[in-house]
Length: 532
Image (cartoon, rainbow, N blue to C red; front, side, top):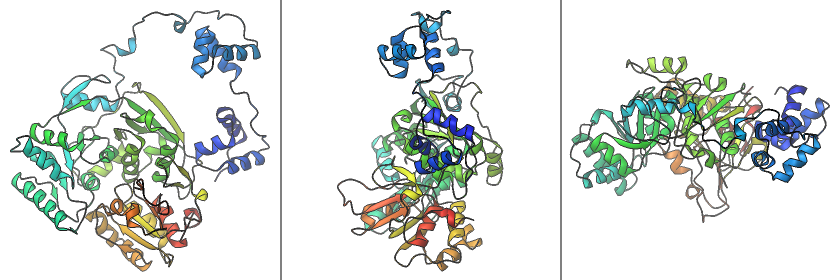
């Protein structure tokens, strides 16, 4: 890993003020930051909390200790002390708008002003309006409705509401991706009722057991395209945003209403722009980035908002990696997430569909609730701990913890790219004799391609168990799948640890690379030693 330049470290110190904070920003331990400082002959942080430039800027803007202090979260007396420290005593020479208590017109919201986010543009298009405002309730017609195992609940609600024929069978996708094959009579009955409904309603995009996970099936079969709108009864429907589409979760009652009327009510969400920059280091992947974001940003700041991911790091990602980022965005509290359409999206879609593409892009001066900039240049492989979704740390902080079960798969990490990463680490090696490892491809197409590339043979030769495509990774990723005192590491989008269960059973989350390295050592391990 490249050591930051001295100028960069000094700027980081001014901004974050401690080795720990700098380490948290870049996903490295504090002691590594201290090592960087030592190499560059930089002492520990000794800058004042607020610079003279900051105090002067606020004083010039407000001309009032109370209002300027509230900007920093301190009292008027506290701000006055900072002014005296820097000998800032004169009243501002120029009157600023912030110092006036006037109801000024915000010209940024004029009707002829563009400044629209991608989310606004898509919802305006689907509601038949020229423009929609943040917070406006609109009636939209989706391009896709998707449901999976919970389709039976939607079917029953559809019948209860008096439904006879669905509004558009060609815009519906139903995928059986859980409890496959059926292990109980109850599961078998559920599957049969869903099959019968799909046949009666002539839903051609019905995918029976073994086809894969619903989100993976939707993407790889071109059921959603850039600039389109989708609703799904699974919380990770935001995965469609990897293609520049807008997708959101709905409850089964609302999905039944969509099946009947072809429309849904939706309030235009605020958007947050997340710009990711920096070159990824060895053995660091999209999964590590999203784990870092989960740790660093409060779910309250993103709750019920849409995320638009952008920046040079995102622009260089494959659709598979973007899938991981948008899929797990809902774990941050977001209602949806998308990546802008670009040449990578176009090349991917040209291979799977001949449909005409009609993407949208945010205006260059679009208004966002707030913007976040993240530099991943110094990011290390990350691990999610079992106690809290925000408890994420560099892999070395968890290294050495004994592992009994490793699972690679799920809609977050079950694509061919993920399997290739794991196979590259496992090739020519055997997993630790004291653990078991399960590989679950995301779809039948992924399984077929893995067979063609020889990845399945690599997994089998390494001692892994390969099972049919589906949602088993998430069904297995809960403490009930572990014996007392056992510990697992998985690539699922979350670890369902639950409450009131034994604290002796733990589930950690990580990238396929970290999971594969851990399988070799029988304990959580740093994958960088295997990715040369």
